[in-house]
Length: 122
Image (cartoon, rainbow, N blue to C red):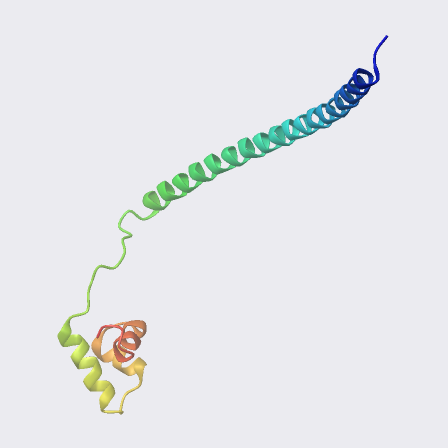
């Protein structure tokens, strides 16, 4: 026959075993849930990668079409000289011409004239 302290230990161990079994069951459910979420994220990532690759292909295709359409199309490389900047500022200081008129006189765009007058090229 079991004595009282041993019986208490057995009950405590049985209780602890039950508690741990329940905890393991909960953790296993969480693991399954996380695996499902991970799979969903993986599928979303694959879809995104596919979409990204398709976008890159479309961009390259459009760039190629643009080159074929107008191969001479290149960004403007002309830079404004210090003399032109000085001339624009002098015309503006006379307070006689509008930006548009200064643009027509100097053959520089309205945007460039505005940048010169507002100190962008200082």
